[in-house]
Image (cartoon, rainbow, N blue to C red; front, side, top):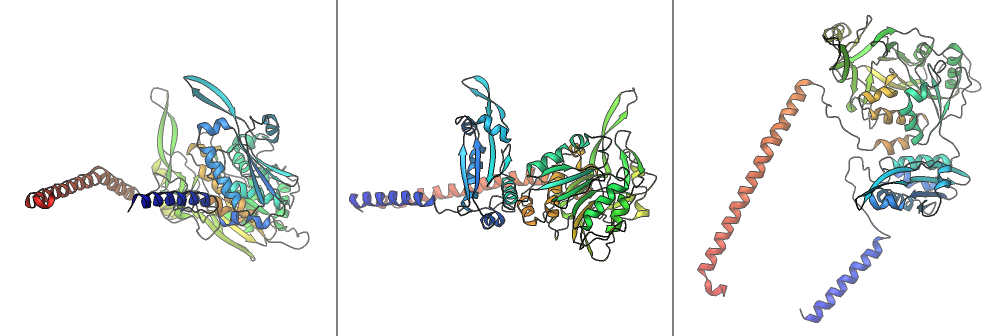
Length: 532
């Protein structure tokens, strides 16, 4: 090839590369090989433009100072541009620095929260105020994401909020909380984590007083605890709401545990809630579910010297509900990530005519129950096993969904035509409270959010959030023999097999290289003329 041809070829190659770079801004693709395709915009979000009548405006308020020191704002901006790209002009994106544009006060009044970060420049530490939040506008309505610093649930939050604005159907959850009448701050004290997760997802929380008429316009109703505290009037209002096609989550149990008084357990005096749930088709049994798939519990006891001794026990009453024990056919538990349950009560399903009932999740096969008298001390393992033979081993239902036209639990007649409703019943109450911090059970909140989405007839939204990879358990294998076998296999694989394979590969490559060197040397000696 001549010098002129070489130069021409190089210039044409550079021109082709430049053209490809220009075209790539309009046409591009990427391969997503993650489990659940978590980095791919879902079909429901891609087709969201079909529901949008006017223009939706998304403004990402991000401080340039934060973008300069952290990669996450760039990832968020890239995601937003890809998201908007599927909306065929129905959604527009603006990226603005509120500090540079003197908008800090204005966006704070909208609800976007400033964050304090510490930076070090030229050995000088300083604290800066930065923003990373999103404002969504549609016609005269707005929705605010106060702080955005991750992309794992960003698609879910965008799509759910935009859909609520476009449909003019705010996502409002009514909360009827047992015990709130005597402790007005109970929601903020015990359910602060759940509240934060629901608000982050775009839900508005409306606290309801016992006996207050429940609006049919609610997205869903959360009835949390209240077996002894919710009176007849409160339950009548709930029953009327269900008869009118209402959607509700009930967390309740028949055996109460007093965590403030040495874990004392007793049968609760039902004020009507348990009877109402049984009439709907989900009877909560007065037993404590026990399972070999157990969590570890920190337990305080008095030492011989009079001090407090901290010990850790495997508590059969703290159950690790495993992902494989979720119902894969139900939208709520199709991508079940597991739950941590504390002193759960099993559920017996006996739906009335016109109502369909499905288990959502169960214990493992190696489960049994404890009947009265109850023992809750994890130190007394022999007492924990007391009823295992009498109650027999086998899976117990701990959560279930029911749907259809429900009969009134109190003989009420529906106002107008009876409508099909949806309810979810879970035989536990503490799993939704701040007690989940004891085992780091953030997946409990994920599940509760999926329940509220299903109750609100947004199954497609569930699929967006539930497809995330999720964090696996290091102690997922509950059978001691299987766990020991896996540990032994991992030890042998990592300590012996992998190093041996590396060493063997080195030896083989070394021998091949030596053989090749000898062969080349012999060829040079045999034919020096040809070499020249």
